[in-house]
Every structure is written in structure tokens, then in C-alpha cells.
Image (cartoon, rainbow, N blue to C red; front, side, top):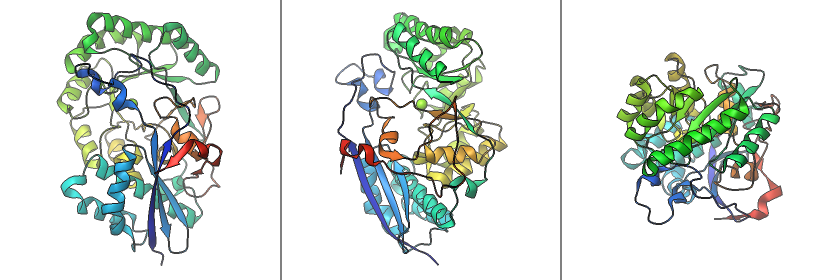
Length: 390
Ligand SMILES: [Mg+2]
């Protein structure tokens, strides 16, 4: 018998160098507001939460969360921690449901579920360490020799620079790429022209045989999306990601039913019931949960089952170990996202700076080690001086 003795949360705030994003770097939800203040505010993530789940024999499982870490920490410390201490970590499904139902009035989506995610990931890491197995071997085992990954960056920038960046990833061996749009509804016809120029520039570099994914990061509305989609089809994109805010499910259904470009989404959806709704309504053609938001590995694994039975591929948001283990263990997860490591900009890069153990891609593939227990992550001592702990 083993029990969870303690939960320890620490926010790591990046205080090292940052490359400031430039204007029209990437569309985001604030673009639909009148231009007061900083439109990129909703699109910077320079903190990360580490949630240690500590068992009575001193084994430590490491969970993490990236959204609103200081508030998520508070939710864990104030509400969730006491629900988990004293429980047997192997009762992970029971613990998940206990946290979910105890915070039902306020916690179902957003911060509450992110807190549950961080603890759940820590529990799975703990179980893996105790069982001396990688987490993917506890989920369903190895379904692929390696995981194909797509290079996910290519933010909006002058065409020449964008093409140089795309060429670099191509030369690194990637065969799949995701790029971002820089303009939205308020930029009218001029913005549509600029967006099309961006896509054309990347397609020109990567050729016709590579996959190209397009990302709007919730920065458009239905009307704009319907206007630009027919103009994008000639570039044969594999998907159009998050054109609308996640709550506009009717809009997603309408865009996906056009049948012109498959719509991808889900990195801002929560829990398997949220995904059941999207699946039932055929609102998206690719599912992109992130285990550190959606309810941890326990919830993500249930979504994998739902998605598989409905023939909707799952390509989790962000790559990163908590998602790679799910991708490795499920046939319905054909490939994964990968953020090329750069200087800290948006903050997607922080995971690499905070954790050691992340696999590095070779020729557009990553692999997981059969002989590393748990998720295989540790705090990266190399860059620790660039963080302060909160
Ligand atoms: Mg995205």
C-alpha cells in the first residue's frame, strides 16, 4: 500500500532574455477588440507550474501546467491538494473523479481542470517511477517505432525571413510544418492578401509533397473565415486550426461542414465530455487536446478512445512529454507537434528550458526511451538561473 503524502507546487517565472513579438506576429483572440493596449497580452506564456506528487516512500511524480500558473497553483494549494493527500496513487481514476466532482461548481473548465491536469500528470509519472516503466508502457505500449513530428513555428514576418525559417526546418528533415497568420477581420482585404502571401511563401519553399498546417489562434470570426477559406484551398492545407474562439461551436460546425479545409481544434477545450460534444457535432476533424489542460493523462486517454471510435485523429497540442507518451501509446495519434527550440518569444519554448529529458527530433521524428521510468522529465539545471520561483 502506498499513499500520496504531499503535493508541492512551484511557479517558475522566466527572467532571462526574451525576444519581443513584432506587430502582426500572430492572430489571437484580442484582435477582435478595438485596439487599446497590448493585443499580444493574451499570447505570452513566460511562467510554468511544476506540481510534485510525493508518495510516502519519497518517490516524486512531476506534473506541470502552463496556463495561468500562479492562479492554477492557488487552485491546487487551496482546493485540490487536500482531496488527494492520503489517497493511493494507483486509484488515479477515482482521484480524478473526486477532484472533478468536488470542484464541479467552478472547476469544470479552465483553471480548475488545469489544476486537475497538473496533479494527474504527476500521479502518472509517480506510478511509472514506482512500476519502473515509462508511462506509455502503462497506457497501451509502443504503437510506432518513432513519432513523426511537425515543425510548429513560422510566425508571420517579412516573406524573405519566413522562407529562410521554413528552409531551415526542411533542411533539418521535417516533412510537416505549421505556420501562423498575421492578419484578421479588421485588416480587411489588405490582410487577406497578406495572409495569402505568407502561405504561398511557405508552400513555395516546402513544395507540394509536404504537409502544411495553418493556425489562426482564435483570431478570426465566422464571416472572415468563410471569406478566406476558399482562397486557401489551392495551397492544399492539411488543416485550419482554431479559426474561431473555442466557445463558438456552431461556427466550428459550419466551417468544418464546408468540406473545403478540415478544421482542427481542442487545445482550449476541456475534459472528455467537452470533446464528446465536439465529436458528436462533427465540429472538428482533428483533435488537439493538451494533457496539461484537458484533465491530465487520465482524461486524455479517454478522449483517445472516443476519438478512435469516431475516426477522428488526435494530434495533441504542443508535443512535450505528457503528450508524447499518449501519442506513442495510441494508434489513432499519427504524429505530434514539435516547437523548435529558439530564444524565448511567446513562451512555448519554456518547456525545453525548464525540463531536461525532452526528446530531440532527428529527421522529423522523435522517440521515447523504453528504459526511462515515468515521463522521463527532470528540472533542467542548465537554465535554472534564468527562472525565479514563485
Ligand atoms: Mg494551436
